[in-house]
Image (cartoon, rainbow, N blue to C red; front, side, top):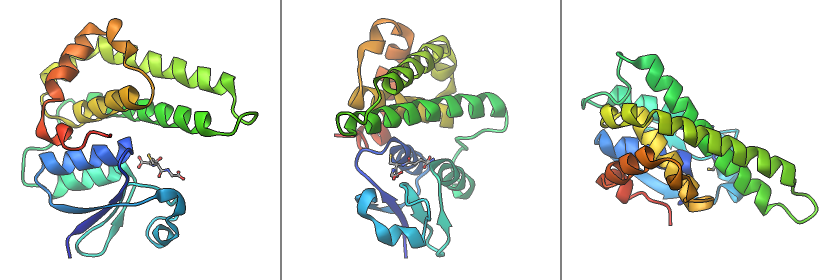
Length: 196
Ligand SMILES: N[C@@H](CCC(=O)N[C@@H](CS)C(=O)NCC(=O)O)C(=O)O
């Protein structure tokens, strides 16, 4: 049995695990599901969220960070989560995850019926998105120097999710980040997993 990754076509968390798997040469069978109706997933992941991984030996792993760590631990390729600079990588990875969470939260809020959605909550999430991206702009040199590393993958996925669901306007105030992402985004692992 192959490793089976329950995923969806637009999940930034799922895409992050896909990119990591591709970069590390780990073969997975990806099953695109509609997580909102996927009752069967509960027996694997009581949170009923994607991504959820069932490994070839039958173990189940979630969430996205755990799956990325597991891929990194079983691959014989160069580590994406290095021991040196570990805490800087972890902190920037968390920043990128927070950007994904804010983007997803904004999207979910916008999809709520008129009268139930909160403009104040949407504005708060948009301000968080802006601050996170501004911080990544300050760290663009570190991202450039990182090469293929976990924090760089997460930042690229988070920024492209922002493009996909919200706005590309951040480029006007973040030229270094834009330049870095344009180059990093040419990797086949990113090109073949881009949401559409
Ligand atoms: N902390 C989780 C978050 C995953 C997550 O929020 N996934 C979304 C799709 S992008 C989901 O499954 N949403 C369905 C739900 O929460 O009901 C991770 O990093 O994997």
